[in-house]
Image 1 (tube, one colour):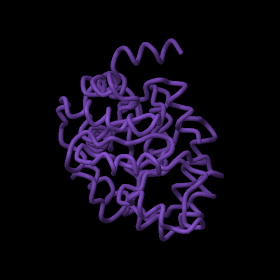
Image 2 (cartoon, one colour):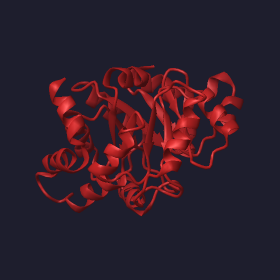
Image 3 (spheres, helix red, strand yellow):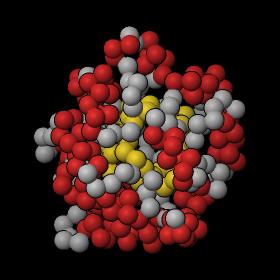
Image 4 (cartoon, one colour):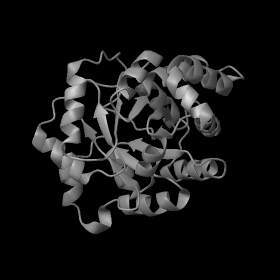
Length: 267
């Protein structure tokens, strides 16, 4: 299970989110490689879905646009293979259960590992439901990432941590992705409750959209996940020929904390 190893090696991880196929699949490959060159330890690749209930309007729009290309899960696995020929950056699929169940979870597990995928986050799959499935419908080769929210009970956190591998995803605020998060005492309290039940790394996302909020998350958590701010930047600059370079500059100048940037340069 490689995601844990990445956290162990990096200490603190910057994790950008990109929607696969937004604006097109070839550009997604180039963007992932650019993120890796700027210091991303893991890239979360969103698999487009027609009913992305956990996502706000920015990622919803990118998902709907990407769906118009007509790509399949096999195409997204080919994207992973193409990235793997050039980079060993961590790769995590973020999706919903419907398209992955239709593809086949055991098939995804097998073909994902062969392609070089490291893990899967199925945002509407509960750990209880996952663990009820027979062995041939479960994911074993790939890391399994589950979401914990500030309202999760201690019993629920314990169940999530037992099912998770790789890392635990802490939802930094209630609601969908996109809106800005103001991190207060509740963030640290939820993080502490998670750490009572697991020694897995904890990464936080939802509303992390600036250098300051990334730094704040990384002062306590092991990883900071940035999605909507980055997807919005890509959307606003998607027609420009130097999109990939602009995204790299944006990550370096507006998202990565200076201390993390220095650490990456030294390594």
